[in-house]
Image 1 (cartoon, rainbow, N blue to C red):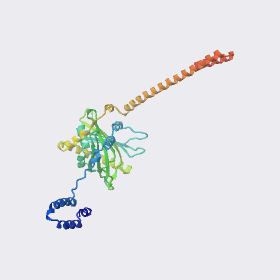
Image 2: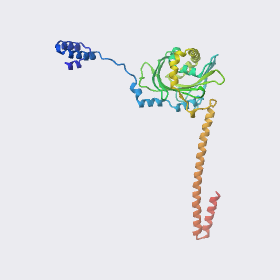
Image 3: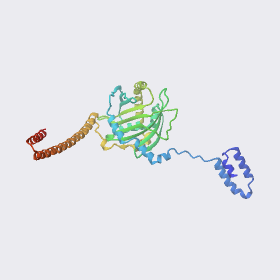
Image 4: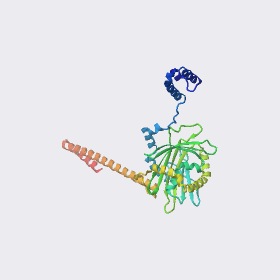
Length: 375
């Protein structure tokens, strides 16, 4: 009978009927067994559903944690610091897009068209009466961003690795007319001298974010910024380098950026002022942000006044010294080879003079030796 109950689907009419007939035939002495049977059958008919623990096994895996740690490294910070100087490669040329200002904010941006890849944007936004810590917290608070940035309709944290300071998240952005875009990104922050902050973001994959047909997955994102204090003023600036391929026509993206970016910056400025008065609301997010920030490696620290020419000069001098050392070593090796050749020539000449049977051979040997040493 129990075997029959196990193969019947839970909750079906046949299961209930079989159970009723089985209980009718139980004697008084078997009620204890019946109670146990009822309990087991209850578990069978109404199994307790445990909520799924998303990512528990994946997050506890050492190999996967290693992958998260290696998504963004200090080498990305080094490249970011150089790129924030406006460095371009090949025949790339910056084109000015916008340069506007108001009493509390100013913004200027330019872009270039790489030979292979989407548009690359470079911008500098300066906010008056603002500290670097406040701007950092405001910029990284994605939950607060959803309140003022209507493009961002969803954001969730997928995983955090406190050891490396890397965070992985999923964002959904809705642009007018277009299908919503889905971003799976990893980012990491560093703190340098004088409360200067850096952040680098890149696209990645995550097992908790499977692709869905209702979204367009953005498969290429490279973005980084630096927040630092403006010398001699109660203000700070955020310098950003951004590049992404969201599947939008280049010319359409450019027109939308030019026509909408200043209004977006003004909205951002108003939200920043409101954010400065909402410390109780942002206390939790600020604590999380501060816990993940790592220090800039001492070898990467460069004076804030150092521009890309000075960096290039340092690299040039470093490579120049290596080239001189290589040339000196090559010259020393060549000199050693010449001394060996000359030594064999001298020995050959001495042998020829000592064994020479005629005066002609002796004269020829002397001429060859003198000619070689004169060179």
